[in-house]
Length: 548
Image (tube, rainbow, N blue to C red; front, side, top):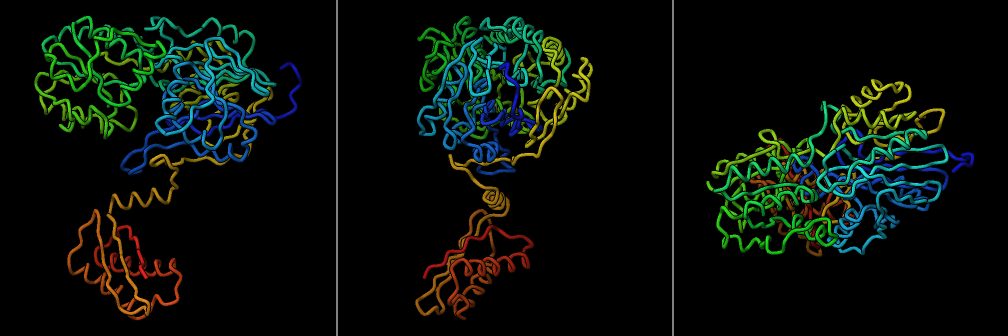
């Protein structure tokens, strides 16, 4: 890499800045593009009804498909790997990541009936050369096993990307953030640092994951006579391992509830990232054979997701688990911003059914995987970058992070707050904004990409209902039956008759004669829309069906 640089080094932000989720950052030099993470985000069901998940618009990468050489994963959370099933259909390139990250990716692809990816497992300290880039994988602690920071050697100098991290001095698996190696890189010189901003507003240090284990031990001890139900993120296998350990300590058997929980535990055990005696685990359909005070159920649903196991328990809709006075329910996670209302609905309903509910604000049952201010400052002090760009956060987080970097001695003119679509020319002379690339969000429904117009249709159906107008024309285009079918809206007989009569009049008058089908459908929509707005000041989604 000692050769003189001949092309521009660009950092392109396609996701994960100005927002939480769908992390995707591209580095481009000449004919080479590498991608850091390929994530998704979950939609707000009220804003995007029926949408399964949202991925970044990666049109820029499609337009430069031949340049894209590889994807480097910092870790296996959905907001960093969740877009891969969609992305790999378009751009099938090698993926580098930890053993558990690659296993999670393969599991996602199998669920989508796709072939396994060209996944290449790396370990702490491995260096991979792809085109103009050399990427070193550096161990960091996070709320999932196998997380990495990336030290990326480029023709212009080193780019250090922290990924999601915290500095946990007592990690459950003994794998520490490699501060020694990070300090060595800082001494050699780092051109640009991009750092996780999630907890920049939180003072001090992030609580150790091992502290959660101690808190859980106390809760198990205090609730010896109750059945214990614990909801946590399925991907947080260290948390799940701690729960299993403490359950065994107090003589309890463990059952898993939720497909993702069962799947993640199976994967983790297969690759030896988890261990437990086989007889400590029982199938969920056998829980009634175990006394309440000898049972622990580990469940999905920490974010109040509609179809999750815990939500179904809360609303008395779970086929196997009925919550009552003999239950202690623990939410071992913090709310993702925007999910608070759904989570408190679940908590309230669990309490109504008689359960004792324990959650983060009351007990130390969750430890964040993201660095707080003192840890961020330590990382900045070790890396000593010439230029600094905060990532992984909403705008307020990124702005606060710039202020923190300035406090740590980085001149403000050497920092930049990124936005989606930003294309930054990085060199020793500075950070120069170039023409933004196309950016946005792509909605995915049932594994298929959905455009924004279809999402608007879904919103309209959710808000105002659906009207199907079936117009049957005979060969002479004379008067024929009209049928109005409604879904999700109720119309009185008088309005229904008026709608039908208006279409029958047009059909019998030959209004549709000689029209292209698309034009006839427009006439039907316009006719019915006018009546709806004049009578009820709103309009459902109208779907015309013409039968000749």
